Length: 595
Ligand code: OXD
Ligand code: MN
Image (cartoon, rainbow, N blue to C red; front, side, top):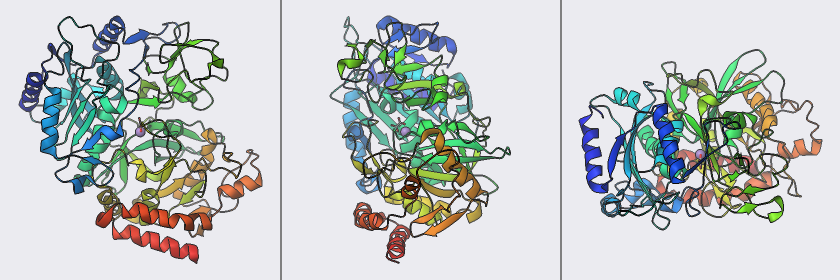
């Protein structure tokens, strides 16, 4: 229980509305976590993995109708549709409240209402914020234990009158008396992920999966926090944070935004192939940043764990992620091996001879379907990562020297490009695009503009969001601001082959950026930005054909000119809220290209 009257009243109000059988205040203890895991084993939600292989770890399969974030069921209910902007589904807040009250009425019957006080960011950091999630899902409680800082210590920090974000969640599957539960309760047909930015509230109904249900993640840390950041003069971004240390022992921090499932977790924990360089991870998904007294931007990772895409994660693609998963992990929608461990596509070069797939069917390598769902996930505490950065919980945050933006682009966009100025960097990020993946429901492989990788997670009009970024650039001296880079690991040749080896070799690009922000590292000015000068990108030992290097660093004038009308069209979508500063950047680019 809490001494916070506002919190007590809200819990009472939700109890009256949702009519759970009981309320349980989460204390965040290991005993609580263990008891809930045991409960889920007894109800069939969890399967305990073999202790000798993966101690204290659990396997879970969702309902096939509940496997990813549902962007078309995600709503931002600002006062006006214009405030939510063209990239959000807007509904009138009063009307939506009525709909939600109807849905939540009696929605927790037969279930327990868990009260999860949680901190996004180290407790007590001036950049952190507190949320309270009320949920009827023990799966959510356990995942929140790993992904955030949960429990009594948060209530103490909240005190009697502290501010918190109200996050209400129900799987939307009340149980009648004597009705048996299912392994993954959800409401397959009726999902609502709703944000009220003005009152800083989240109401989520019908889904138990990932970002729909772990409300500290996209809902609070990005959609609601982006609005707080706009109002309070800071940044809440869809960015990993990494520390890069040179062979001389100098460390610099970088934050990088990529659309979902473009390898953010891999980059955040990368093992450099360049001798003597080291990457350490502060976070793999979200960064909150404020200016420090010295005028630099300091970032924290508001999360405390990783909720990563499992398929593709292997000892060669991301050993540090796999090593983080050796114990105390939750695996959702992966495949199960006969000896009680998990597997997913590409985890090992040769698949096991037989598996039980995520849909509970027998699976063999020749059966022509995937064993794990493409958006299968692992959840684990960040502190288990072998390369967690020593400062990852520093309440001050870590000083950011560079921002990287990128996506999957087979054509046009070079391997790395330094922005000519802050505004040019904001321009590059505002037009970034990527071929779509499985992280959100929808078509795969289409080019989608995803400005700042924030398209599905910005809680207000993106025209205003761009203006906020331009304003941030005016809040400190230029030399104190991070420099901005655009990167693309996915450039292909005419035959469709990806030219850059990626993964650990991306350290070569990080090294060039490190040198640039250190005032070293040679670059050439081109119409699209500053590219590595000949020989400035360390390609030692890579044996990259010269034609590949040329293609990777090419200024594709025709490709960019062809893109200008597409960018104009993209910008037109933001109407009069598109800042003039960005139109000016677009015009300047066109002029430089036509040179
Ligand atoms: C995520 C996502 O889960 O962006 O991080 O989808
Ligand atoms: Mn993400």
